[in-house]
Length: 307
Ligand SMILES: Nc1ncnc2c1ncn2[C@@H]1O[C@H](COP(=O)(O)OP(=O)(O)O)[C@@H](O)[C@H]1O
Ligand SMILES: CC(C)(COP(=O)(O)O)[C@@H](O)C(=O)NCCC(=O)O
Image (tube, protein in one colour):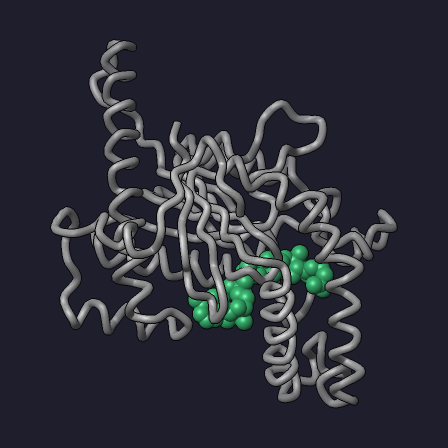
């Protein structure tokens, strides 16, 4: 990413200093616990990248709480209403959004043990395969029109008003929405919302989903790397699928692996590549923080919005 006027470019070495002494340090035991829950993340990443990030989120949370107190005073209310803090995580398919989101949730839970912290992915707001077929847009899965953005907007509205909200659930293994399964969000303190579309503008709406966010992150990397991670994840999904006849990928998993890999590459080129360039990358500059990854998912630099 080239230098942007409205972002501070912060190298990893500078960023890692930002949490020093200002946040509850983790004990070795807590760190080990966090790493055991997320085998994809290194100890260095937790200390050098995620701890300063959690510190920054903590500061934003304080400001949000202060605003709510001021507003309550202005309105002559005794107490401010409870409004959950919402963190959005955007980026390409397979860039590592859900891995980042899971780690952030684990860390926040460790640091704020009495708070309720939940995570949803907007994959659940994709139309079901049956509905995509009915709309003749099965080949457009992941593109803006394949999501029920109105439903997502209403969901965000309920969350922010501290009303119970239900997020539908998507399974990569089934490659579809799981009918009747929901993640229930209720009386939550922090909600993390992860998905390729979280910084997009829903059609026919005046509101961005990100209007509900208190802090937003875009996970970024060069496309060659993301494509490689997509293909590697596809291979991992096939390994899992081999053991399960009901898995969507079972047929590919027991067949010729090079034909399956060629199919995945084709999906990248025809679907995920154009989606990244037409609809996901253009939302990058809406994020409060851009985390830029290099080889082996190592975060090399961060871009923090100046204002
Ligand atoms: N920090 C990381 N270290 C190692 N592998 C990672 C890391 N982040 C993501 N991955 C791997 O990259 C692939 C894509 O990550 P995932 O979180 O599923 O992406 P997304 O949610 O953006 O589609 C997965 O195979 C995941 O295990
Ligand atoms: C469900 C998704 C839209 C969401 O992507 P995610 O960021 O969770 O990987 C994507 O994984 C997808 O299915 N895209 C359609 C093309 C494909 O099969 O990859």
